[in-house]
Structures are given as C-alpha cells and as structure tokens.
Length: 230
Image (cartoon, rainbow, N blue to C red):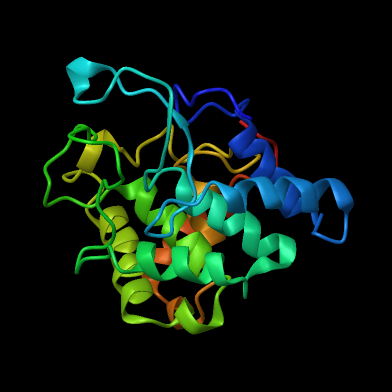
C-alpha cells in the first residue's frame, strides 16, 4: 500500500520511484517486481484504469476519505510501468490502455478521472499538458497505438503548446525558463521529459518545433558534452 498522493509532482512518492525502476530495466522476471505488478493489477477500476490512493477534500468535490481512484496524471504512469515490466499484452493492461486512449479529444487529453466533481484549475475544453504527456509516454510503448489518431492528436497538442508557449498556459502549465532546466529523473512537465517522450514517435522526426526543443537541450552541454541536472 502506498501513501495518499498529495502532489503529483512529488518525486518521493512511490509512483515515481516505480517509473524509475522500470526505466532502469527491471521486469517481471525479477520476483519483487512481479509482486508489485500483481498488486497494481488488482487495483484496476471496473472500467480499466489502474488506481492509487487519493483523498479529495469535500470542498473540492471529493469525499474527504482515503479511497482508490485514478486520474490522467497518475494512471498512465502505472500503465507505462506495467508495459515496461513486460505486461503489455495482459488483458487488464489492454483494457486500461483502450479506456484511457479513448478519452483523447482533438486537442489531446483533458483533466479526467473518477474523482467526482474535482478537476484541475483550467477550462474543461483545455487539454492538460501533463496528462497529455503521460498518455503519449504510455502509447509510445504500444505498437498498436503509437501511430494512432489519438497519439497524433496528443503529439500535435504538445508541439502546439510549445509553439504558443507565451500565450497559452492551460491548467497553469508554463513552458518558460523553469521548464527549460534539465531535471532528472523524469517526474514532471519539463524540457527533458517532453523531448524524451516526443522523440519516440517516428512521424515527428524533422518537425521544426521538436528540433527547436532539442537544440535548447543540446545547448546545455558543457565543453565535454556532459549534461548537469539543474
């Protein structure tokens, strides 16, 4: 059991630690990972997405109790983890993938989940940049979804937000000087994380907006070609 998520950008939460060990290359061939994967699979909502413990206060439209729930700023990470662990073809993983991918709109993924009336600080019609990024990250691992209309719409949304970064700040996500700092491991919405995800899509190779982001990243190398976390 995990502690309640109080902040989706808290690097110390087990959700992000789990993503980190998946990126290190651990799989279900490692018994402790198999045990963790089984626990995640058990906490799937009836419509598919994998859940974490949350507590949404009543004044934000929640119950005020600790309960299993999901949002597009956490469930896609669990999906990503299970696929990286080697469970991409598992029936429950495929069900979660189809449900979350189906939430995409023409402008990518919104703020969504089974959190009652609660949603983030933005207009309903806006995409959530972080949810959009996490969904693209999961779909990039799935051959059947990597070139799907949903993935293409999400990728275009991410690049469009970069292009209009001075005017558009949906759900209070900015792409300014703090966004451009190199941050590792990949936890929140920043340059390195966005580049890591978007470069997984072959159809984006040569896109001038992505090239602009990559040029900013390369410019942060020192004289020996090394990068320092900021």
